[in-house]
Structure formats: C-alpha cells, structure tokens
Length: 376
Image (tube, rainbow, N blue to C red; front, side):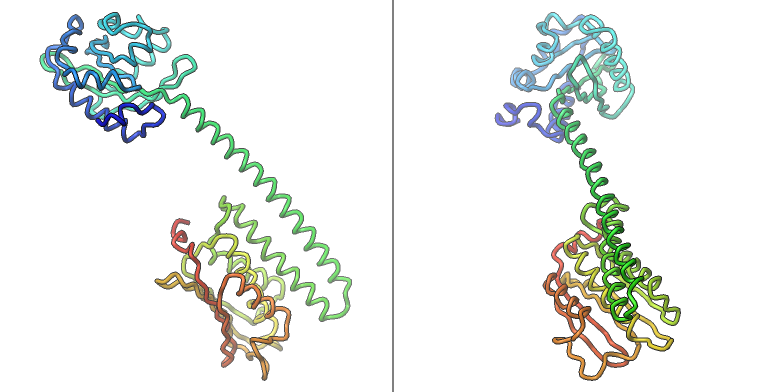
C-alpha cells in the first residue's frame, strides 16, 4: 500500500479501496496458525512488522476474533475506540467492552459472518456514531474458524447522505407545487381564450382563438408529461407527438382524416422539446384545417428519424390538396408557418417543403443530447 493511501482519512477512501484493503488483510490473517483465546501474542508474532505498522496506520478499525468471538488481534484504531490498549482487549468479548445492546448487535453480525463464505457488510450504530462493517470468516490452522473485520466510521457520510435526501425531498415538493401552479395558470388562460372565442361571431377570429388555445395546450401537455413521468427535463417525444395529434383531432372533429406516427426513440431536453412540439402542433393543425376540405378523406403521416450522425428529421406530410399556387416557404403569408420558421431557427434546424400529391414539411436539426434517448 502506498504511503499516500495510508495517510488518507476514512472519509476520503472509496469503498473499492476499503474492499481491496480487506482482501489483503483477510489473506494475511488466514496465514496465521495455532490461534487460541489464550494466545493473542501469537498473532502479533505471526504478523510481519511492516504489515502490523500498516494495520495500525489506517483510520479503519481491524480485528480478528476466535470461534468464541473473543479478540485475538486488534489494531490501534480499534483499541483507541475502546479506550484501552491492545493487550487489555485480547481475550475479551464485546460484552466486556460495550453496552449490552450494542454488543448483542455485534455478536449477531459476527455469527452471520462466521456461517457465511461471503463478506458480510452491515451498518452498526454505537452511541451517536454509525459504522460500516465488512466481516468475514477466517479459516485458521489447527483451530475452528474465526471472524475478521474492517470497520469504518461513516457518520459524516451518513449525515451528508441524509442532507442530500432531505434536499431532494424538498426539491420534489417544490417542483410539485410549481407544477400545480403552472398547470392552473395555463388552464385559466385556456378557459379565458375559450370564453372569448365563444362570444366571437367572426369565423376567422374564432379560428385564431382556437389556434392560440391549441398552442397553450401543447405546452401544457409537455409540462404535464414531465410531471407525470417524474423527469425534470426529458420526455419520450414519440408519445408526446401522439398526445398533440389526438388533442387536435378532438378539437377539430375531423372523422374523414386518419393518421400514422412512426417515431424512433428520442428524448430531447425541454429546450428542444418545447419548440419542436409547437412546430409539430402548427404543421398538424395546418393539415387538418386546410388539406382536406368538404369532407374529403385523407391521411397525415408523421415520421421522426435519427441517423447515425445524430441528425434528427421530423417529417409531416399529407395526401390532401397541397399548398395553393404561388406558395413560397420563405414568405408563407400565414402566422402559423411564420411561427414554424421562427421555431425551426431556435433549434438551429432547416425547414424544407415539397408540394406535390399533398404537402410535405421536413425539419432537420442536430441534437447533441440524443445519446441519452435510450436511457428513458
């Protein structure tokens, strides 16, 4: 073991380092022979001086007990814990060294280790301190097997973990309160728009209100999906597209139109999901409202693809009547498509359009976070 590692405190050592120390110590202890409860000094003679120095240098407590669970070896850190010298402890059991309740807990885990071929890891509380113990059976030559252990004071770590857990609980409560407040506010805004649309007699104005309400609903659905899934930043975008399209069909009640969605697994963060969801909402509603007039039957196809270069492509196409003659994507002349153009620029994407046998919109962009999509 390097000198730097010997000087590390118990809180600085990783669990992997502790287990490596444990394996080395266990290997050494199993080399000991002829150990009895009245022969603790034999242990000191069998342990090489450099290795004994190592055991006394670590902040972790180390001990070896015989089959009757009496100490036959204890390092300096463990002896200091009891406030005695090693010579005073050799030959005693835990009931002579600590309160009965704590001693009974130690005895119970000692017996578990003694009857197992695996390293038994437990947390034991003594007073106001918490200890992580790694106990294991030690095969001794000529006498029944004993119990060896590495013990680490993890009180500070446990307090830190408890602090983090409390902070996470408080964060979840805060997010829940924020969710309900935002959701209520969106519902109020949507209701106000709906009331205004109800009292509007101008068809074009009424439709504008519905479009605005649809955009608010799209953002609200994203927020609700994040809250429902427990994610603070990512959603399954394929399912989100289905939610948007189904809501639009409920609004416009177009039984003559069918749809299909074919989406690769994709979980963008909220900064990408919001503009991309609004883009999808505008393109879906355009097809529903304008491509199939007078009850003509048709279909809307949506595809979401991610290639090996992490390029994302969203395609929304229909087999309806297509765009009017003279249509120019650079100057679309409608609020909806102007909004789509602005939103595409927000995600550094490219918007193209094909106007034959219906109309097809294609949005391509690179999402540097797409490797995380498979984690959901």
